[in-house]
Length: 309
Image (tube, rainbow, N blue to C red; front, side, top):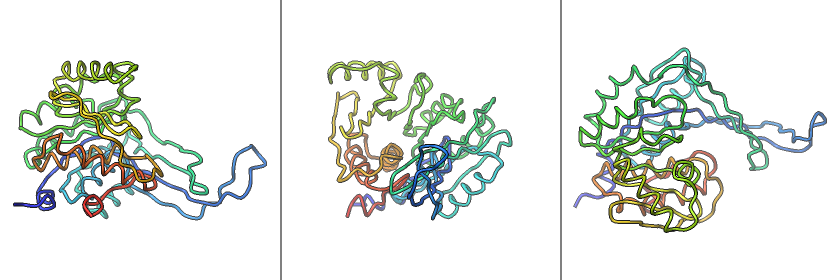
């Protein structure tokens, strides 16, 4: 029988969405500024990491699967750095360049192992930044087994409904990390993976598990989804599908940083569905991956060896 590791080596995932560059400034905090009641950080180290959809793609790659990232970036220094990191990590990328777009950068200042502030550099484009890449998506689609849409609400996925339609017509599993209040654009996907805050904005709050299940299943039916996977931080995850409600407890050994945990969950699910696994089989493995990644600092990945030591 073919091992899962071998299956992952053959699996191919197409990631589409909003890529970002995560920058970190690490330093020492020894005094408070005389200008304002804020700490003064003496920077001793800088680091750049892949963020957003690029981090999702890297998580797929870290598991041993093949991945292609389709995204649009600006024509600026952060885009060059992002491209360099993608090449260094071995992530195949189809990058569109848009001079009107600022490549999104999240700058985090870290002092004494604590995040002190995050500064975001971005702009909201006045046009569809991925519109002219529909052709690239269409050409890349046949050689992939699953499609993962990483929506960070930065304007890159206005045409996601058409992309989902094309992917499902081609028989591909389609996974979406959603954003915003309009989930109708994700109709027909195989699986969406909102967190608690994101889902409550769409279905309203819930007073108990029964109300949550009723509302989540109603949303799933209205959107014609195979499954809705709710990530619940320290409460684990809940899958709502045609078989009902499957809940799995959190597996975190020690929570250091939840940044990017959702990226790891959906990347793991996509890689396993690309291997032919069903959602219920893949769920406990993705849950284990989330438990590992929250023990790491910042946007991070989980390897196959970490998942199956």
